[in-house]
Every structure is written in structure tokens, then in C-alpha cells.
View 1: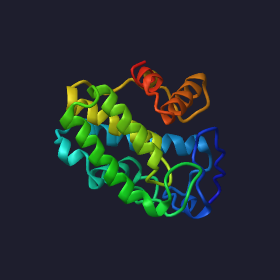
View 2: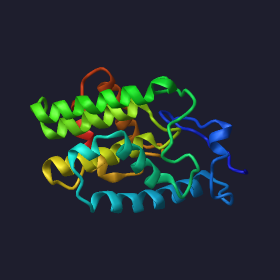
View 3: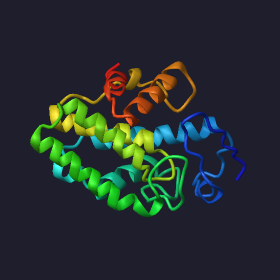
Length: 199
């Protein structure tokens, strides 16, 4: 394959085996890759946000993995499959499923007990999901869509604006603000991430 992927701060590098899973062999630039991924993601967004799903079904491993498949299956062979390598972020590859199930149980508890307001629940869900890093790539975009779906189910609002939905996959001041907000959330302070999600 002729594509050479260059990574910016906060992105998860793919290994050679993962890169070889690219379905569209004519892709030769990162720009082309981003365009194909974005088209696939837009189809998944329409599918996900235009259907009613119960909280019980949404907060399952099956739904989490199926959504990633729908977001990336036209581009990557490994879409919707658990990563098999360790990355610069995330839990150990062998801990993904038990940590994910534990996190989903936590979110169900927060909802049932109104531990946080719905917006904070959705943002904490997104942050915990991306910190597990279930997949070889696309975890940030996947987790943001999961948060959008959850907030829609909890409040009937149409999801978050995420910095007016700029491309957070490219270097920019907004991406830097997003990465900073994620680091603050890593330390337990979710205010910046909530503010960014609503900006």
C-alpha cells in the first residue's frame, strides 16, 4: 500500500498490520483517507441518530462495537474489532472487554441514581470510552458519537457541538483546546471537556 500516515499530537499510530487492513487500495494520501472515513462516518451518524434505542441496549459491548463497525467498515477490515496491540493510550489489549463492561455498568448506575446531570454523564462516558481505546483507530470520533447518542436518549437534544463540529482530526487551535480538555478530564476535572462539547 502506498499510503504513509503522519500523526499529530494525541493521535494513535497504527501498526503495519493495521494499515494493511485498508480496504480502498487506491488511497495514497492522508487527505483521501480522511475523506473516505468521513463519508463512512456520516452514514453511520444518520443511521445512529435517526433510530430510537433504549439506554439498556446502547450501554452494551455489542452496540459499542457495532457502531464502530458502521463508522469505519467501508474503509478498514478491522472496523468493529477489538484492537490486538497495545497503544500509546488505553488499557492493556487483554483488559479491554472487562474494563469496558465495568465502565458501562458505572454509566448505568450514574443514570439510575442521577449521580451527575445528563450532560456530565454523557461526557464522562465519552472520556472513559476513549481512555479504554477499544479499537486500533477512530476511538475519539467513535466516543464523541456515542456521547451524542447517549445525550439524545437522556434529554432528546441533538447531541453536542464539539467546537462547532470542526475537524478535530487535523491540527488546529480547537484541537489543542480539545486535547487540553481531555487532559483535564484525565485528572478528574470535566469542566473544560463539558464546555468544549457544548461550544
